[in-house]
Amino acid sequence: MRTSTTGQRLIAEFEGCKLTAYKCPAGIWTIGVGHTSAAGKPVVKSGMRITQAEADDILARDLVRFENAVARVVEVPLNQNQFDALVSFAFNLGEGALASSTLLKKLNAGDYTGAADQFARWNKVGPKVLAGLTRRRAAEADLFRRPVTGASTVPATPAAPTIPRAPTGLLAALLGLFRRS
Image (cartoon, rainbow, N blue to C red; front, side, top):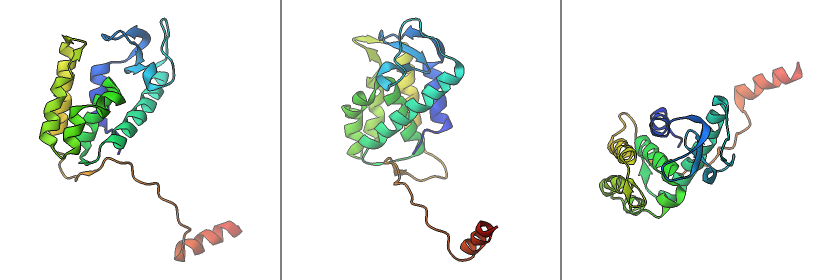
């Protein structure tokens, strides 16, 4: 499963996009759409600048990292909205926070409602409640609770890669004609 446009918008709305490195409220050097050195390359330093194209590339890599993190730790089926909310949560707080959270424990026990209620607990930096984190956690919980119309839940684990089969029948015959030309 990959993050939908809705999930990407949620992350971008709360992270913003800054092309010059800055320290986030937790004091961590950040650039682009919420990228920190903890998420991988590039290492973010004071005075660092990137282009919008670089910010887009970094975001794409970071999303894959956190999508894979969600897929690794979630043991129950998720709909797209639930997956997106968890990717946003992990993107903001890190893989370790998700992996060790009561939110995940409740989710993996099949308690989807209890899991959704846990988002609100993650609105602090140290002992200080941040309004922006409170809004983000509320948006993630709302997305997590929102049903996906016309779609069913699917396992969060990535699908095994398909192995292409050699063409057979009419397709094989047609391809054979083109190879001889």
